[in-house]
Image 1: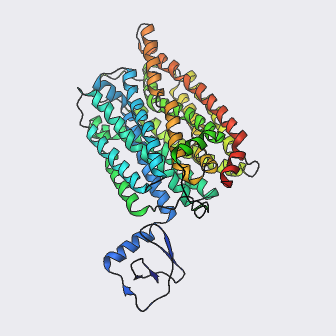
Image 2: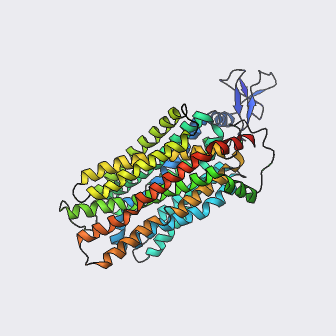
Image 3: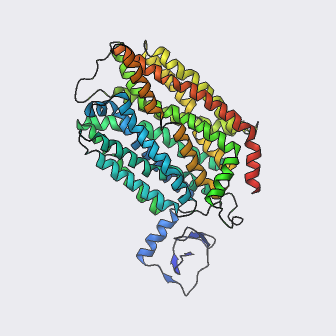
Length: 490
């Protein structure tokens, strides 16, 4: 038998059990007392909800929310050709959609990081999910005369999604520690490629089923509202640093200025953030342009015709989405297992595994543009291997941050890392690639072959940025042990 905070009995518990109160704290189990009264039905329901707030359940719900976050982000990419034809915009104009989204995302991230280190995190998460879900749903009703309004709606969605990406990893960081935290963060970051891939599939499937691409934007909002409700009900608000056994030692929080100065002096954090920017640059450009690039490749190979219909063929988007799902799962799992094994050999395993995977990924991504003109199957094979190696470092990068940053600065650190990675990465890469492609197309007579080649030449910038990211991870390895030791001593 256990006792809730209002003095009633909760059946089904032993005397040694603990009960989580509504505030998220744990109260020790109490022995039966004759003065206690039976719980009312509403109190029993509340107690049942509290018992469901296990760390594993919370991590699962947060991972589900992350899937939806990225699903919504890439649903637009799944119907990109339809959007381009509907609004009659150029490559650079269509690339502006992702750039505006990411710019608003990165500007809002530090604000939510500040709030996440000081206020109730799950309330902020839920409000963010509700906001982007409603805006996404409304954007599906914007007519073709108001493309600027559609672009603006993607910016508002970016603000809502930034709250989730900045804060949710810190809750997992406070619920688990060591290898358990690595595993749970791996599950959480599996949601990035899984959600991204499902976004392509959902967008293309909804468009085909309804005969209208607008329906691609009307499914994920319903799921988002569900996820926000689950977070409010079942995700606890753990004490910051509790999993690291620092809860009793953390007495006061430092100012935001002090936090930023400390992060700027943290060399492992700075270099891993720059490496993360390189990953974001490549994934942002690839996620936006590869399906369109492969569609143009098939026109050049005369295995498909250029789209002149109201509903364009989305086979490439669906295949690329499926590959992204599988490679994401493989990459994050392989990264977690490889890091755990390599930690037995060297304590610098985390940044070293990331560096090797980045350099290997650059090789296969270069090969995509070599073989795409002759073989779509060969291009898909190179995409599969290149993406697997690229996705290998996502969860590891988050774990590096948890090791070298103290708990009361983690939300700020995650938010600012998100800001810098987007500022230097995918905030500009989709638009930049489209701009280069448009400039190259204007240099020569427009043809199907040159439209394909110009986009390929623009995308060749990505592997060079990936190599630069690998170098930043090697630099992180040089300072990782010193910065981790400093964080443990503070």
